[in-house]
Length: 116
Image (cartoon, rainbow, N blue to C red; front, side, top):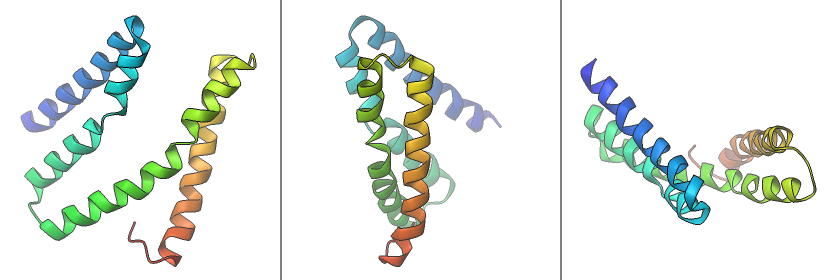
């Protein structure tokens, strides 16, 4: 239970740090947020729970393929905001696009031989 709490605290601190830095310096906050810190922490937590090289390799590879469909969201949201769309609808549309692309990836990826 203590380990689970520690994981949550470390993860929350990283998210908080990125958002606090972004308030003052949006570019630096974006850099922090774009670092694969969550992925690296996830791999550390997974390895701690199950030190299996093949399982880790599959996890890291699947993470790569799932990052790709999330990237268009970061182009759509600023485009919508610059056209006057309020933040919450822009965020919702960006998230909806990402969900749609994730669904496409989970449907098409295995047909292309990807282990997701």
